[in-house]
Length: 262
Image 1 (cartoon, rainbow, N blue to C red):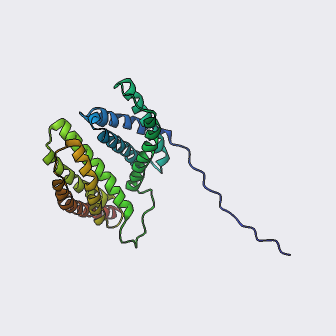
Image 2 (cartoon, rainbow, N blue to C red):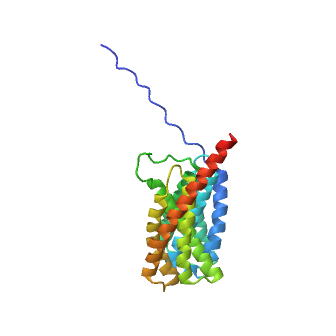
Image 3 (tube, rainbow, N blue to C red):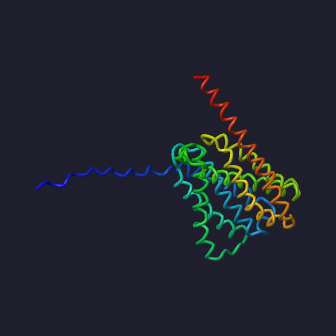
């Protein structure tokens, strides 16, 4: 009777230790961003939905910066940063603003913060090139659609908040600022993504228009919905396509320059 053949199972690779340096960097950066946009922009707490939305996007920014700048994969670190920051926000809200936060907020906030910061970290890793790409034979690169949505929402929201709160930008002008953010998003995605990704920012522009419509109405309160959709689905998508094309061209010129140096 023969003994069954032995099988060699690959040992699972252990997780690398946490990068506490980037947890510290993310926490400091997040404290500055949240202080600037959540506590520093006028009327933030008059719109609770806007405050929560802004907090989530601030956490995404922290994740993007940590994921993009740190070597290797540091998504776990961004989750820890998110939890630290929302606890700090809660403490500051109680001590400085005398906000009596209910217990459900203390429970829900870390569950909200960790995935928001991790999503930003994943986007940062995509921009750095450390995450696996979609299959080349796929007609659409959905990961880069998600990257486009996150980058576009960050650019659009913070641009409008700063413009309206500090520079007196009117609601009609803010709609075009949203559309202009689609151009910048297209350039970034076209430049950082491998292959051709012109369509992905355009699809993301449509998704961003829906989300941005709610934000503009909550922030300004008197912008016609038809105006938002007309500019977003019309000008925003066109600008995203143009931005994607420009980003691809910049990427091509850089590749040619690098090849020439070699």
